Image 1: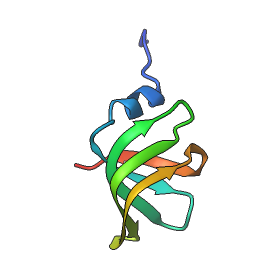
Image 2: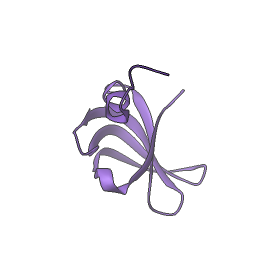
Image 3: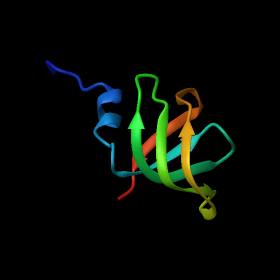
Image 4: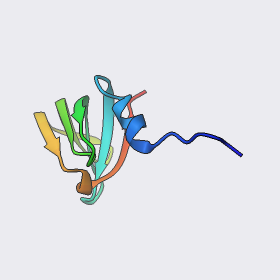
Length: 78
């Protein structure tokens, strides 16, 4: 049995200043950019952001802030 557990918020904090993809609760829409900051509610601030609709590149958005309650997944860009 593991003695320590890593909380998801700590995993997200470890991604600060790296490129991530964020899937939101809006019909197959994602945002990809550099994570600037995150708070305890998982509200995130991203820079150099582009919108992805399906697998196609959409608009360049620049700086965005996404509320934590609208986020489905956060993953690093490999």
